[in-house]
Image (spheres, rainbow, N blue to C red):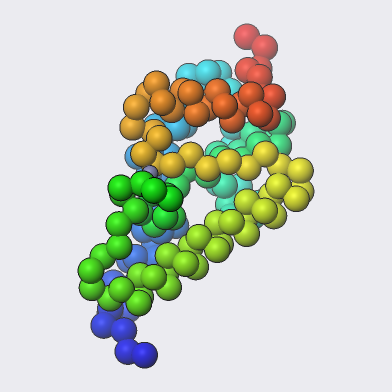
Length: 144
Ligand SMILES: [Zn+2]
């Protein structure tokens, strides 16, 4: 099947999918930092190279873009009109890879969670989402 996307465009797309240090990710990092929690970034030795990792609590957070990672029911998870087969295939592979990474982490005893890009827009909503994740994983701030 001939794909009309050039190689350059395709590799640009790939780099966007794996994008690190996105603004959503930076918003999550600041919110976590404000709580006085210590974390590591992009641990390559863990499945999927999670964006934010709390080794002490075996907790890993992925900050996912709603479009690339297909946030279910989210209005940002649109499908471009052209090259639909290409997009469909790409999206399916992203979703499959994401769920395999979550499963791999969880089966190794990690608390692995996704924070969606759209959940980072409102500081209040983000704080609530972080509370939920930290409660589940029983993450507590280091002694102040
Ligand atoms: Zn979303």
